[in-house]
Length: 171
Image 1 (cartoon, rainbow, N blue to C red):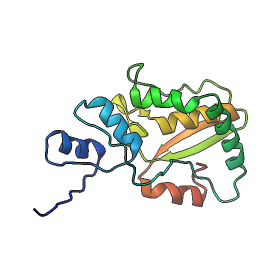
Image 2 (image 1 turned 90 degrees about the vertical axis):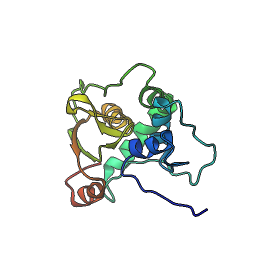
Image 3 (image 1 turned 30 degrees about the vertical axis):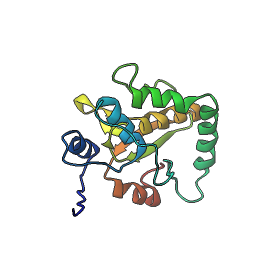
């Protein structure tokens, strides 16, 4: 018969459509689906990938922060940090995760990080309106390596790049 495609505004809505048999399959970002599958035993992630599209952080063109950030991120990755973040935020093996506390001095200043809090496990609002998520936690850990504090600012995804370009955001 005819094939139909529905578009959902959130991963919880789209995965619920599969759980309740309204849809046969969901296409979305892998970390979002991994988190959904960890919460719903009815969901299975297929091994096929449409595209290998890794996540990244953006900086103004020519920003000296980019190289410093990449150096700190490479150090954390070499120490197995990606696996730790995956276990903490996607598998949630330690219970409901929390962001690292900004308990370092920040003698190099403050980084302004703008993000879209629309998707667990990457960035979202937890209970009590607290920011949570792997992307935010990752930035905080990198900032700690660089000895910067972080000012967190939520905005729609469409506002993240303009914020960086205009200088309102560093990341």
